[in-house]
Image 1 (cartoon, rainbow, N blue to C red):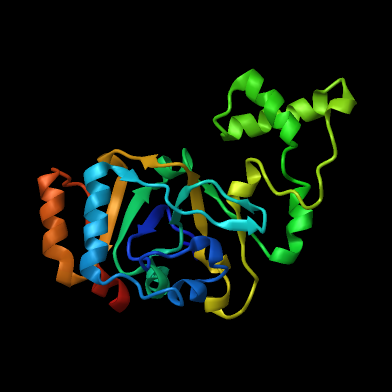
Image 2: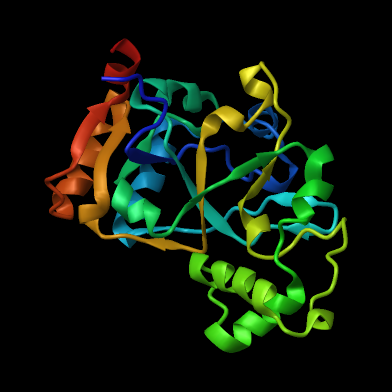
Amino acid sequence: MSQRYYSNIYWHFTGSPEGVDWSQARCPKDITEQGPVLDNEKAAETLKLILDSSMLKATCVEKISETHKTDKFCCVTDIPFKDLPSHSPYYGKVAIGFKAEAIHSHFVPVLYIPEQNLPAVSKLVPNRQLQVMAGKTIGCSGGFQETQAMKLMAQASANKEEIKEIDEQEIGGFYSNFVKITDFDTDAESSYYREREWRGIGDFNFDYINIDAVVWPEVVLPSIREKLNELCVSHVNVISWEFIENA
């Protein structure tokens, strides 16, 4: 078997520091500078709320430029199981793992871009006038199919005057929601690149069958087991954080 650098389980951690302004964070150490991760009990309570609602709420917003921010999103990571501890200093030690099929239908891997490269990225953004044209034709849900339709409309448009040049400093449209600004650095705390984030715009509603595993420290194991039993969720793999660290 070849070495895997990704996981087929997509993890969402619940221990991020309270009140983080994600628009001001450009690397992991910016997160912890805004406050400590939640203690295990609080992170477990967040996980139980997610289980009760069957939803990951889209609460995060990130800054792309001084004039543009992403829409609200929720996120998961496909880092390998053995590397989960590398997330804990910034996102805690409690996480829920989703099956790949459920994530692929709602989430998209982010594109990591250093800030100085933003002008080049703007050339990839769909023209706003084409977005309006596409919206009138196929709706405005912002999904992958709509994006492809915009490309086709740009290629097939008979009236070239309708397609205006994109300003080099303009960052907007579908693609910008999946751009994550961070420098590339050999220091793990100074770059988001190693986090392998997948992002979903808007809330993610899931069925319990979409859950593959949950991980947490042994100290909160009884309370989360009780929640899973209450919800009659018996198929989920239950893994202690201590097992991951010692494996």
